[in-house]
Image (cartoon, rainbow, N blue to C red; front, side):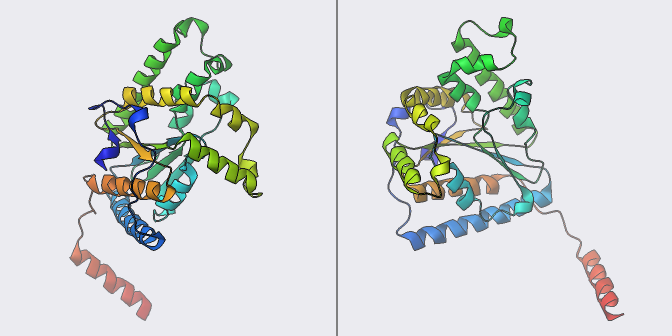
Length: 288
């Protein structure tokens, strides 16, 4: 899994990173078996985390359209107890969102201790989509005198804000795992065409998706700069080869299982004498 990790110790060059690697599974049955085992590991670790009540985990999924965010969340986290799992999906900011700072709406959805929180699209849109479409900055209510004349200064400021935000969460017991699902333009095109040919999935596609593909190179540059600026030791990025969805899901599941198991968490100490006393009380109630 170290091959996919970027924590600021090495540069990230998106053109040098593959979107497809050798499969980690022999066939579909082997993939399902491995995914079930990893799901079980995640469930056991999350159960400890919930009982311990000191740590929480924030998981971010970022990708181009059809990169596999929804399917990865659905398949990888299928074993996580839904009562200790918080999911949030973010789209275009509302009028209320725009009247707050750019991180405000994300603060509202952070997980509590003992929970796994998942963001489907994230605050990184504020340095990705807005960088490709800087005119959208004027849709908000940021005072003009506080907007740098040079957009590069603004993105640097926001990178700094995000790193501080994630460091703050880490120091409070909420490590962040960030996934960029790296899919090729050719594979994305195949998936979009498949959507259009499926009557039950056509609704997922809009003309705007087609327009966004015209900015592919700009998005790739934005991702490269963003990852290099915000990858840190405690809050690394994982760049996942995503042309093979099955492989993608196994890699993500392995990283999350390892991450959850690495947390210094444990079940509260037990009192066998007290437990036996309570068992006798319950048996007495049932015998009455």
